[in-house]
Length: 406
Image 1 (cartoon, one colour):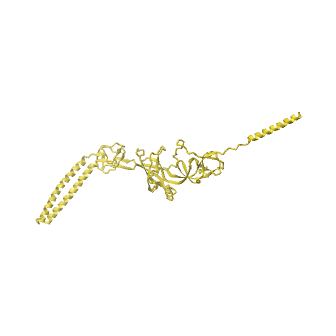
Image 2 (cartoon, rainbow, N blue to C red):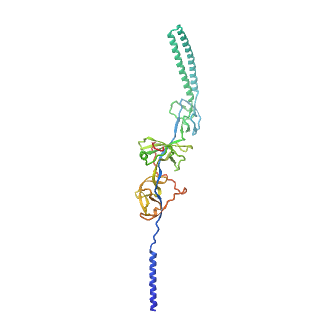
Image 3 (tube, rainbow, N blue to C red):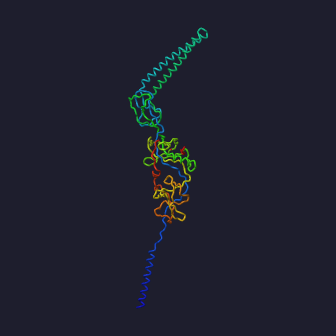
């Protein structure tokens, strides 16, 4: 029995020892694998220098329809809001007084022409008598002067007749330019005065159309310095390099071409006006509309850029990114940013070619932590995020896009 008890005690000790070992082994932590993050490798790429600027739509040509003679408006011949062509009759002024003036001028011309015939015959007759020495030189000189006077009076009568014809033609008030005419400002029965300030209607040429955008003098001068130093490359002079952002955030269907920049800055705002020409075949742009223009003013041929979601912010708002070092450990790197172009931040300073920047999975890592990297797959067309209108801070329009800024 003593031997049996000893054996039982030994077995119990062995069981307790084994149980303690199993509990210790179960309590030991299993090392977790490093978190997986998606990265992009920084490389040089050509990126256009793009700015969103405020602007106003302006007609390419505008003309006020005015009467060149005085009279009573008897007829309006155009449809308000329609397209008119240069030379179309828009209003008719009572022609009766001008027809009478023309008849009177023609009668005066006929009388002066008859007097000219008589003066010419008289001068010819005295010239023959003078050659025969049967008339004096004084008589001939008087007849010759009468001939010249009659010729001058005929010329004056012709001018009066032509002026009367012009005034009669001016009773048809015609369109000075082709374009879309607005509302009629006068109706039939209105008496208009020659040279008066009254405007009969307004015609505007809307296709193509101008958009006047504004940019600060500081930005414009920096752009010119970057173009001169070669940091930015110039665009072709005939490139359609401006797009309009409409009120609903959509882009206007046709691109525009920057024509020139003004040579004078507005003293109250410090901004310069840039004029852009757009096609407007469907009259979607109206004069006076407020729009935002997205303008390409140059190309940075060796720019460094990272996706927008890669940028983190410190508590005081300074930008930084997670960078994976050669030993696969993550670290925060402060950066200096430029504008946003095509949902990518331009990085001015803080990164170099070949750096691996974390884009997805930043919430799973901490400084100095080992990570597993995978290349970021570009978004498909279905999952690609739409461009945000707030990529570039909006500027308010001041009082009033060339591939290069002159």
